[in-house]
Length: 74
Image (tube, rainbow, N blue to C red; front, side):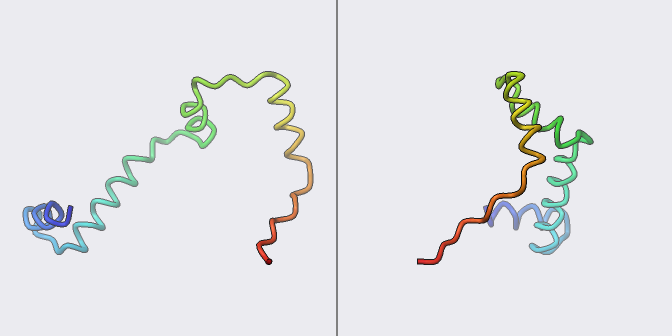
């Protein structure tokens, strides 16, 4: 992977770090589809079907107080 990064940086006239930053920027930009979080989640869960009862349960849980975080003290 490092060799590929070096070759790409050399082709593009950038340092290794500049090339890495540019690759990351391109990947982040490509990931921004303009879709909302809900739309992206629905596309990921396209095979899953929630029942009306499941949807109501989720809606009700939004109004419940947050639970106590777990304690990892021993």
